[in-house]
Image 1 (cartoon, rainbow, N blue to C red):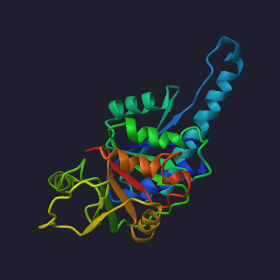
Image 2 (image 1 turned 60 degrees about the vertical axis):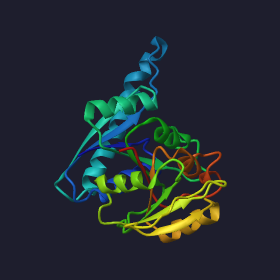
Image 3 (image 1 turned 120 degrees about the horizontal axis):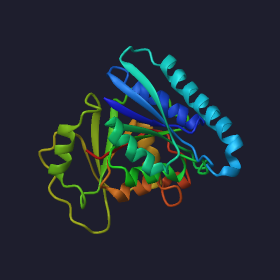
Length: 255
């Protein structure tokens, strides 16, 4: 398995890296640590460019070494990627070059939306990158994800499609899933008989509900095409994270 971890050397991104190692502790994984740095290649800045490049590479190598020491299994290998491209371009290139299966990115608190990679960028990555992504809140420590909540908009994701996703899922196999259908307006909901996993009656996706979800579950699983749910979870101005902290990881599934 090939995994991409985004870092800007902040505590939040360092924590996301550690969570990735813990989450995949029993898997054979090649971890690729990506830092994006806006180098100034103008001739007038050439004197400081080499020093800046060396300093950034040193910091990136230190991150790789630190995660290597944190990782106990011999199944894990680490390398670094330094890019001067824009965020989405750099990630897309890594997806192709490294055949990435899963991405980890830090998700900042409501007061930290100015980070160069994090902040609004976690939301941007989820919306524009078609790869499985786990957004890890700063300060979130790894707990075995025994209970997973799966919020869905039935207008976007039919029951059969929900079941197909869970049947094919290569992650969270040992987790207990609870489907939570999000009520939106006056749409009619189909008969939900013959379900194999727990199901909760359609409800509005409010901040109070989100607080309760964070108390009861270890991870949130959401399908990328459910854009309205991604908006409510990750948008730094209009979503829940604008007024409250996200405390558990969010797995955004793209297939």
